[in-house]
Length: 149
Image 1: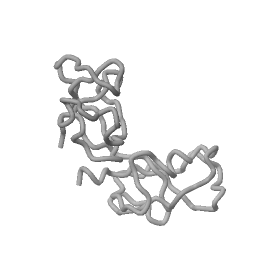
Image 2 (image 1 turned 135 degrees about the horizontal axis):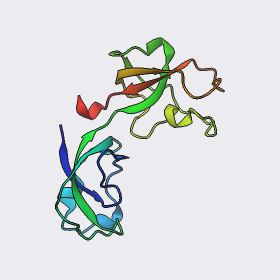
Image 3 (image 1 turned 30 degrees about the vertical axis):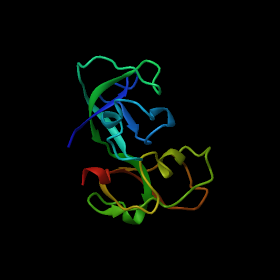
Image 4 (image 1 turned 45 degrees about the vertical axis):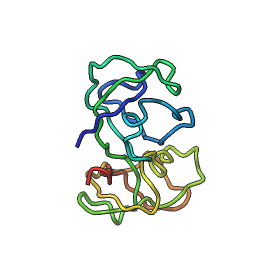
């Protein structure tokens, strides 16, 4: 289900994805707080429509904010190969200190939390790495957003 919110004009393009991180200290006293701070923290969203509403001044976004429709977006992640089936649920395998690994953004993806179960929407296949330095057997999948369930 789509929600209407305000985001920075630089992000206001159909298809743009972002993770909502909650309120900034600069939001204090803003008259648009209710329209801006209406999403769920740490959830990934996709802009589905940019409304023709003009631009409002904002203390956080230097070029102002504008109204958009957003929906919770899926998250591409690596999970244990033994649980990687479309329609099943899985959790991220846990933190990984190897930030230079090409799979690291999928092992600790923005918009997904450790110790949270997600429904697997689609199995992509092999992750980008040649081998896991933590000796994990991983598969790249598309996780559904818990916000949309």
